Length: 506
Image (cartoon, rainbow, N blue to C red):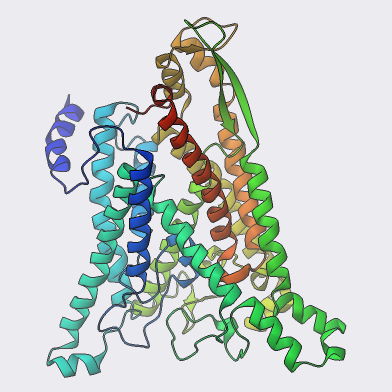
């Protein structure tokens, strides 16, 4: 009774939060496409609007996670989807641990869950912005403050408002895509960010801009090579004698510095993810009333998709943010120390919790060149810890994702029963259908979560074109494949409206 009373009390408040109105009837495919394209254009516009008043010595502590957080360094959407993902992590953990007694299969509880998630996003926007300001990463420009005749504290507040506003805009842009567009805004922004980085990694003829410390990669210091792989090859062929270039050292340089290995890894990851996405178990279905009407319910190997990997990496990013704040603001070295670029140093705990991004993070010769004196066992432990986090985290978050998004056995059984379908050879009963699909969904969820963790680890072991990182590339390819299937599904429903009932559409 107390739980019901609490739900009844908080429900009106959660409903009063600003929200994008849900369409009252089916939205036609062309209109969904228009909304999706409009939000995508708006995202690119916002990513090019710089935060006013930010000092050029500011740093992006989350630069290594940009591919999965879908933010843009130095712009008003600096936070990207970070607050949304973090809020989802916290809420899923609370519901999974039954601290919040919500049944997400119940429409009323599901509405409360979504309201709490939105409220928590607002909280996370504040909690993810303030540490970067107090930690000395987002620095107000004293020259601009003096020219405006205001204190740097006031300018810092103006910077905070801009970054927070960007976070709120991303939240509602995601909601617009989810309700009026195709897929989700979170997925769309990740693909947009990765695509932008890949295009820059192929066609950018400029060298790294070392005059901008924001997001500076320590590995790029002293490099005069262009960023884009095409112009990088042209520079190497023009400036290095062929006798040197095709020696053993020259070939090694082409593979690493020339990013030939990155190109091979990028193509391999693309093909691997497309193959895995097409691997599935199909449960046969037959219509109970219409003889000869048959169908299949596909259970993909990656049943929970790759979105749990966003949750895993976002959790690591928040842990690093806390460790960096404790060290830079309060001088606490218990969790580890950081260098001037915000990179955790061995042998601190944060160094071992830092994700693997490329071969420079686990091949001893490269790691030892960045961290003189580091022991081989520390490099191995770092690699094993990240492998454990990815695989175990993939399993845990895949389970939470399936249960909280209505993809579990009970919800699927209810969906099949409601559509008028049944599994041939079994009685048309919801409990019977649930028992049959339970043979596959829980097992595939665990196996798929572990498998996507392994794939992410393999992808992260090699530097990819544009510095998108293995996780970012894996997410982008998988999301594009799913978006293709979603578009095909939308077109099918447009031609055959009755199919919408089976797919859960109104």
